Image (cartoon, rainbow, N blue to C red; front, top):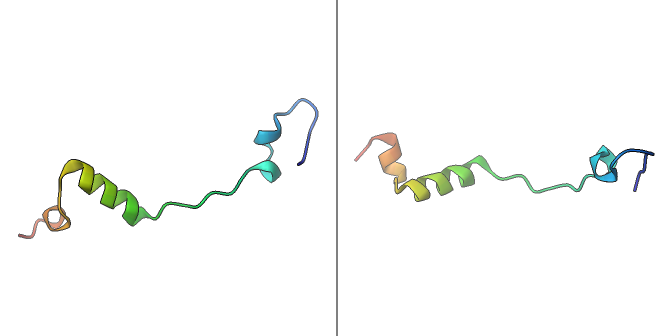
Length: 46
């Protein structure tokens, strides 16, 4: 862990923990499900 006097160690880039990015399709899927909209309904096709 990198330390700098007077700085929060968690605010130093080398100390940040990597995260797994969320795929945009997963976000869209969750929003559609929450709003009760089907994929077909989103495009306007029946």
